[in-house]
Length: 391
Image (tube, rainbow, N blue to C red):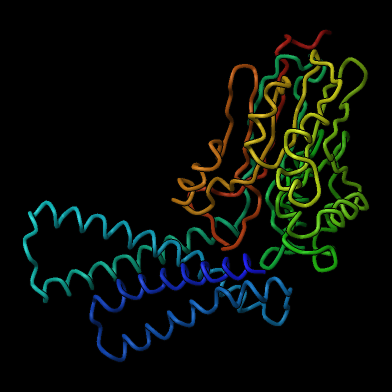
């Protein structure tokens, strides 16, 4: 309880500090007239309160509070963009000040510059937020790529996997969104569908009806799922059971054969790394169980929510790992922060004979915005490194 209260206190302190900074740069320093300053300060205070209020309402799945949830979540994204833009402008202003060898600027000119910066940043952020909202909520791109696997049997050359990841069904993503991605996925006629975690942000009771359309996914070799960290926040065991009821195979530190006899490859899946904090296996033990007694002459595709698992997987001879988790940063320039924890943020990476593809995600988390990291449905076409299929 003590740790939770400390976390809440720190979070509220940071939130308050960010809003004070925004107020100082957009309202105090420009010295707007009293009516405008009071109105702007009041609005900023209400928006600050909307953030914790929306998180509380979202946790309680309050249907009546949906409008406030949207306000709070949208403001989170705008707040981040404002804070980033203002911070960048301050760095530029500091550099200009130092370049002038600390020449003083009179108060009138300082006010004029502050008003110009405040107006320019407000317009810039408004435009960026509109673009980011359209990216997150607009049509989802199908990203197509080819991956060459040395041990893939020639008979499986052209095998297609459609990857969905980080959908985050919850406060602002519902059944209609799932219906859309199911329709888009089925239109690609994949051989296999892989859902690499963070499907939901809530309980089965609250969100079960929203994900039910996933039962309509069609692929001759099946639909597979591995847990992400958000499944553990939401109750992983009930979700594993619910997905099984919908006909989706949940891989829990295990592997299956995809194909027939010799013309097949191994598909493995591990629980998210956070499982260890909820009574599950450690990441290394989960990997060891999934790889136990495997034939290394066979090709292997691994589903693991977090890209960091690739570093532990490579000693086992993984041909390809499919991951998500990073959202590609979701809102630029947050990706620079994500890279401090996750070196593989988006796209295809290769080290020696092993490769990893990290999806930017199909949905979004928190703010309904994506800037510089559009959502994706990924179609991965496997190519055999063993030559053409024999006639």
